[in-house]
Structures are given as C-alpha cells and as structure tokens.
Image (cartoon, rainbow, N blue to C red; front, side, top):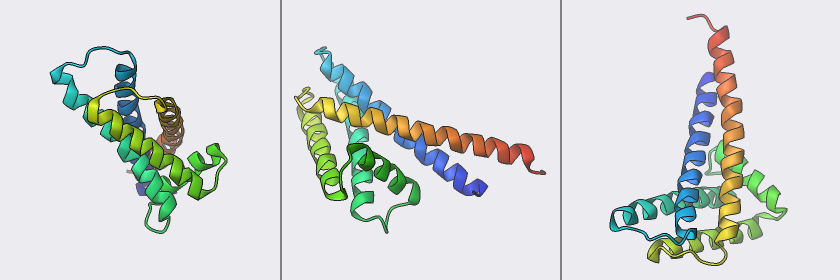
Length: 148
C-alpha cells in the first residue's frame, strides 16, 4: 500500500473514531439525566450531529458503493457483517439510528432505542481504531525503511 493511501486511510479512520467518540460523549450526558446548560446545548447538538455524519457516510457507502471511498465502504461492510444482515436491512438500521440521533438532538432527550445507537457507535469506533492502528504501523514502517 502506498504512503499516500495509508495516510488517507489513517486520517479517515481517525475522523470516524473521533466523530463516534463525540456522539458517545453526548449520549452519555443525555443518559445521565444531568441538566444541560445553555452553553452546552449547542456543543451536545454538534456532537450528536457528528454521530449522524458517521451513520450517514456508512449508509451512503452501502447504498452507493461505487461513489464511496474504499475505506468507508469497507467499514460499512464490517458493520453490516456484524449485524449479519443484507445491505437493505443494514441501511434500514442505520436510518433508524439517524432518526433517533436527530430526535435526541432536537430536544436533547435520551430516548428508548438509543442503546442500539450507542452499541453501533462503540463498534464503529473500535473498527476504525483497529484500522487506524494498522495504518499507523504501515506509515511507521514506510518511514523507517525509506531513504530521505
């Protein structure tokens, strides 16, 4: 794999992992029944939107693999395989996750069903981090063996 491709996969993996982590943080705050202050309201909504961005990217990759970058499609397929479903049902599940995050972001309330969203975000974060670690290792190997 080329240096450029490893770097691109590494950056994409980090972005997915960070977005999932932001959404998980927001959901944990909503789940704790803590009072959401005005200053944190916009931050929580932004974090939930990060989670929506992850699900949207993965859903779009399953719907239109020809338009998706290879890393996003591979991550979407891993998630689909985890569900043990065909694309149609995985897409429906991702759409439900999107709807729940949107609903939670609208009024900053923790709803039933968000447990599945949390589980999916944790899996996405784990899968993205595994790939990121592999690509980071490839980058280190490339730099260590190249002549500058």
